[in-house]
Structure formats: C-alpha cells, structure tokens
Image 1 (cartoon, rainbow, N blue to C red):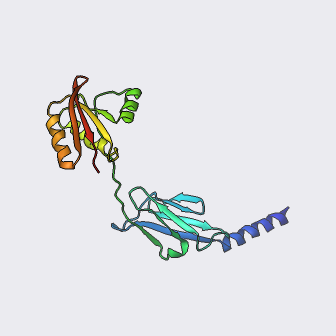
Image 2: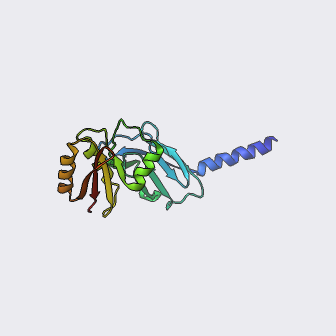
Image 3: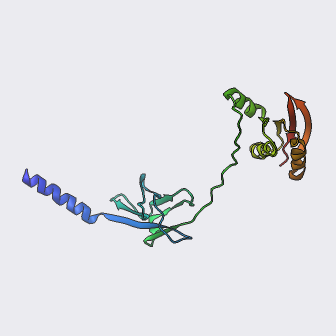
Length: 193
C-alpha cells in the first residue's frame, strides 16, 4: 500500500514539474490600469481574472502554442489569438463603446395583444404623450423599420402635427397622410433610406 502511494506521489510530482503555466495581467490600453473580472478562455476552459486583472492557466500536455486564447469583457473589444503571440506578461485590451438603443418611458400600459398588433401592423400608439413625446417615439421606432416600409404613429397632442411634419421633411421620410383616427391623429410615414 505504501509503495503504491509513493508511486502515485512521484507521478503527481513529475506531472506538476513538467506542466507549464500561462500567467498574465489584463490591462486597459488607455488608462494602463488592470481590468478586473475579465473572461479568459483556452481550449474550452475558462476563468475570470481577479481584482488585479491577473489570471493563471495550468497548461497540460495537449496544449500547443497555436491554441488560441480568448479574452472578453463588457466595455472592451474582445481578443482572440494564438498563445505564442502573447509575449508579454501584460495583455492590453482596448475600451469599446457600446451603443444602447433609445428607451421610451410611457405611462400607458399595453396589453400583450396591443404590443403584438403594433409590431405586426407597424402602428405605434403615442397617445397620452405631450410634445415632444410622439416625436421621440417616432425617432426610436423608425430605426426598426426597413426603408420602403410604412409606419403609423397615433398621437393626440395637436403640436405633434408640426413636430412630425418638420422632422419627416428634414430626415427625408415621406409623410403620406395625417388623418383623424380613434379620437386622435394618425400619421402615415414612408421610411426612405
């Protein structure tokens, strides 16, 4: 029993002796400060850097210099390249802006059926919103409409006639009609490029 244990201990000691490690610190390329909690992946194994941006991979026998190391973090451009291209103990990642879509807050509570109808018909109900609310709704929704498609905006603020008409003219969209509908104003807009 003691002999088997000694052989097993010798095996682990030699395995650890031959194993290599990949250790580095992830640094912001602009501020030159370490970036904590970055995701680092190698050969379907992953880890997160510590508070100081450090990580350490224990490489096994199947690891090759051509294996790719992938690094990603929200707010930064991702990196993916072979291990042999990482020649420094510091790995720099570049900040990358994330563009968020516009969010419109309304006091109107839509039922799931109303939401589905708006999506299918490309009709948006901006009734109950005061200037410039209907225009802001139009600006946010028209981004999701393809060129050549129609969008209908419902509003009940009389000032929206002027706002939406002028905006369509300056942005190159065609205001096909302004009609009375369901106790409000319906704007039918053709999106041009």
